[in-house]
Length: 381
Ligand SMILES: *Cc1c(COP(=O)(O)O)cnc(C)c1O
Image (cartoon, rainbow, N blue to C red; front, side):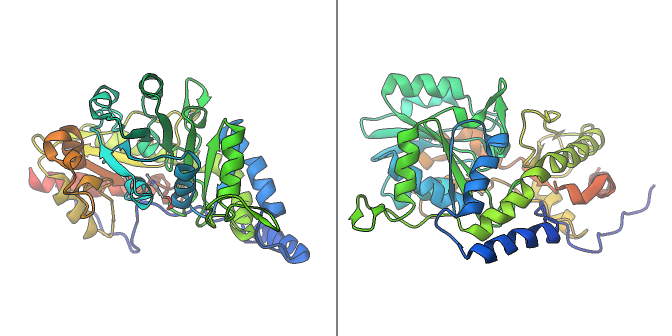
């Protein structure tokens, strides 16, 4: 019998932000100091919007101070009202943004494979109050964008995507943001590309972009005219400078994550009841999360037992997205939150475990995590 693996000396979290070269960031700070422009669409902001086309495509890019406010602003810019169809298998921000606008999130079940909205279940949830579909490209897995577009067209609905995890995702070679009316990206420190806090909306519609630029700056058009009920959701120059130091770091970070995915798949695929994700495509996948699924009917160790056991080795995996948003206090009593309405999401939420996935972990770190998981499984057999 092989020895018990040793715990990691330092806690290992599910992600760790890419950190730019300090000298490069300092050069950006010097430029900011020289011109003394700290916000309101300064040179760093303009340059970052330009540079992000490399990753997000040719659509119009509007930057925001965080992803949640970006989505808040887009919902307002699209004039959504009444009910919006969305997924329960997401981060709290997705339904919260709707609720903050007085819109009712209506939860629809997900597909077992992609874990995104199941288009075959959407139409049954549409009422005369429905104004839009808010899909989430969860873990960077694209929603069934074609089916969603057809449904939206048939029922005259807007389509908004939460692409917080989908930086750089492509479908048939097309940037993910070219689907739907608008797509949000989060640049939070936990995301692949980040600006510490930040976000963007990408849209093909120039009028929608202009409306968001207006709304993110209080609705002010000039010194004497306030044209709309806006908010302040602008990205500042320090955030943009950080982003500029990281745009070129995304590709090598993705390559390092790809190497981790190879280790995880090789080492975990054959454990009973463990399902590893498909091999990522470096050209088309974001590589935001590495989500393992553990079938409790087959695996000797349940997802929750493994999650707890890993903590004793200083490994802090995350059960994204358990619990479902439909189980959160503000949503649990809604009719669409019933378990019977969301059988697949409830099953998937009990299976998922996101493993540490960041370049600095290195193949050795991933190997050590696999050794630990194997030992935990072996001890339970
Ligand atoms: C991170 C995240 C958000 C929120 O983005 P912030 O930039 O942190 O406001 C929204 N939706 C999903 C799915 C996320 O993971």
